Image 1 (cartoon, rainbow, N blue to C red):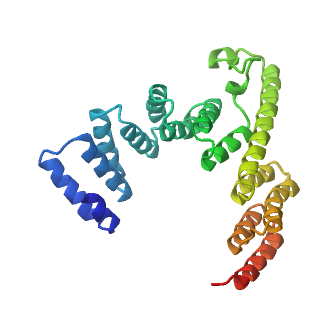
Image 2 (image 1 turned 135 degrees about the vertical axis):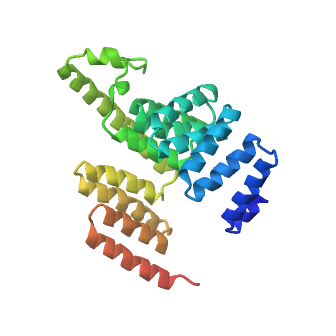
Length: 275
């Protein structure tokens, strides 16, 4: 019933209902987790954090509780503690997509970028069609690497933090430069494969464009967007919404005039489309 109340926009009543269940002795982790979610959505961060901790303490192997508590910890600046929990959860449940992806998010911010890449690659093996994961993996591969991306011929990390610190600075720069080249090659292969599967995914092209613009390659950034749009036009797939998406992406890389032209095409396409 609490979910029905929430769906009707009656969140305070749903919270009251679950609180009454708790007070009547229904203190199982599932009820507490549902209440934590509602408090989270209501903006009660301290209450949500306390409830997620209680749910986790009762059932620490429940991945819903692990992810909920980790998310709550991250919002209050305790991301490293959350990362430790997520690492343990992934070690015990290496094929759980949601937990692997959340762990990758926390690794990228609080841990190792190289480990985040590994987790995104694992998620790719679990679900190769997940575009969100593909985009995030592409982004990580395009960013400057950390020492964890320095690999041997078998693809294994060559250094731990302690041994890396003893490597001369010039050698560190060379090794990181080589790792970045390898990561960028992998990013390009990933992008090409992803676009073969979904050749009209202009938003994925927008990710590539944003990275190219950051690298000062504005012409290539625009080309990535325009190539997808040209493909859609050639195949008769160019909708008004696609032109709007193109316009927003062009605007985001500083191509105002081209964005205005795309918006004009969107208006023309909308007017020509039967209602």
